[in-house]
Image (tube, rainbow, N blue to C red; front, side, top):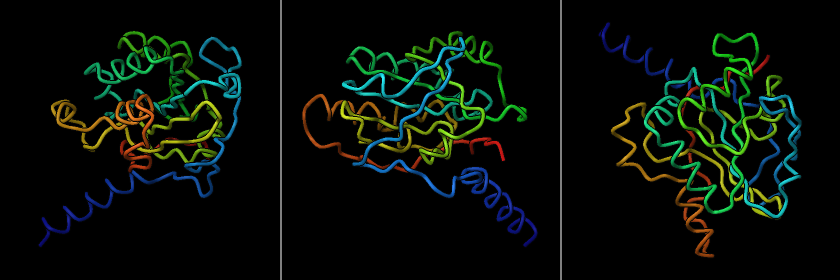
Length: 207
């Protein structure tokens, strides 16, 4: 009985880790205009979403302190997904909404180096330490993925793939939702799964 209770507590804690810090309100809705934002990249230069009007844009919420993020970067899966998107003319923006007071927080230069060391190829890495942009999108986990069309409309929101685990071996068996959505877009057909369940670590938002 004690073992059963302990398992129940562990399961509850895991569920809280995946959902804690979920913003109460979000402005990002599939089929509607995606919230505009201006964030500094890791070099301190302002990057505005509206500057990419006319292009598809992928947003990736990231945090190198998260084992789910490390799974996709250390395996090369995130870099491969990024490069595949860029080859199609897509802009890829990696966003870190981790607050400065968190033990997971990396200074801009260190974050840029970590992504580069793992062969990441985003168009830009953006800092959102106050969490305003993350909360506007309702970003809950790292990773949490979004796709915006050339008219600025949100067309995909959810997980990077279909298997919620930290196991590298699961990547090959999973459906990569971002690649699938971009393939549907390229083929001029409706996105098969436009709203999926994100998984990963809860975003360490500033309270």
